[in-house]
Image 1 (tube, rainbow, N blue to C red):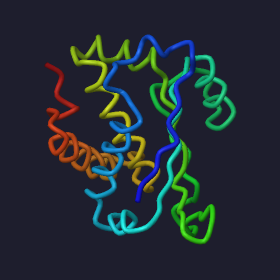
Image 2 (cartoon, helix red, strand yellow; image 1 turned 90 degrees about the horizontal axis):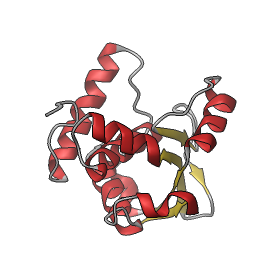
Image 3 (cartoon, rainbow, N blue to C red; image 1 turned 180 degrees about the vertical axis):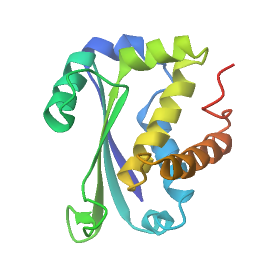
Length: 167
């Protein structure tokens, strides 16, 4: 069973797509985990993820503190365990994958620039962030190609077009 601790800052609640709900986020994350053969087994256990959607100033604080980048970004992923470490259990039966921090105004701006709906872009970012929680990365070109292929397949499974094709 997958659970998502889902929260929205009050300042942005009226700005998000009404489809952006705890159950929608849960479905996106479940599809993402199921699409990764080495992680799909987690869905047979209790798995917890935290998703917080907020404003640029908060994301900027986290980005400055944890990545030494004094700017906001669209999504930040904080895996509970490093790739070479064991999974983190919050109790004897629940694995905590980590936290996602989504910047609502950045998602809105990028969606507009890319001629996408807010929900389409937010879905892609949640897939992308969840893959980071599962230790996928895009530091090298080879890793980026693998991650982008997985993202594209998951977006297709969720009914969205390739996230890397701008209409």
